[in-house]
Image (cartoon, rainbow, N blue to C red):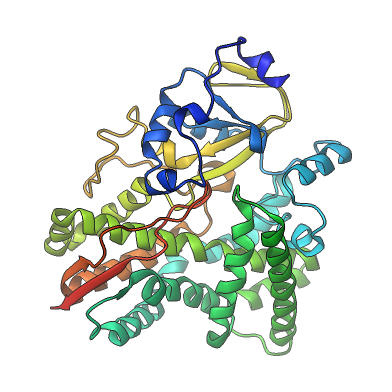
Length: 422
């Protein structure tokens, strides 16, 4: 019915016609021809599996992301029976811990609740605050490299990149170092359930991980109440005592901070390194001109956006891309497609470390702009500057790099590399 309201009968090109299959090997290897075909359609195409309209052009994605009438959650907007129907459609139902701490969070709240929760932790994520973490991150990265320096070949993802965000975010929040590996496992098990290949097996894993995560954070909270430290969880406890958090909001915010920076940082480290390995002239230029690294990192996020898909719901009838959509419509924001839009980026399929301007959408836009964007860029700066300084040669040690399947992620599953110390 909705499709008939918006498009003339017979004018609809299907997603299958364009090769849109997020779980296919072809799409995970290179989704950008499909994204290009989507952008070139006059119509905005309907993704029936997820009951949403996919936005692929930069202007459409940016407009919806910044529109205050577009929300992440329909709680308090749609009738309860409609929300229950959507939960069942997306297999988000019958998950008491997941519904309590993951489906409600800073990320999936809007309006005054979102502003209140974001305000409490915003100060810890500013550029100036994050800079104070640089010595700690540098020491940890140096130690990891020291352990790997004599190996002629290793997996850049599992042996190196995967260790860093969990350690940094865990220390930042206040989790003991020895717990960081487990925090990563829980985070990945919860986050995997967000993608389009949602099934009952992953549902059980996600719910179990959320419950165990919750129990861990409750214990950590009790420990910090007894013995406060100079960490974020101790600061949040002070804020809760001042009435800024409910118990559930406290746990969900801690959980989100620990989850949000794990997978995406690992993915962009992997795709960033892979992109440099495929562009040796760019890597050589960065060695000779390290002052270009901040721009190169921005280009890594644009070129291979680690979180290429998010959603918004329309709270009122609205115009998007020249069509009228009713309240309650869901839009899929394809950041990965928007960041290759030639109307905003010259030669968008070319990796250029000196690209200016580079107003990419990899961190989102509007009220849900990624809270951890400064921390992600700090990690990238320290890691790549250290690698380029300490190794004269870094080479790809495998012929074909396999990328993760799905619509919500973009990053290599493994990346075998070899190197030679300077």
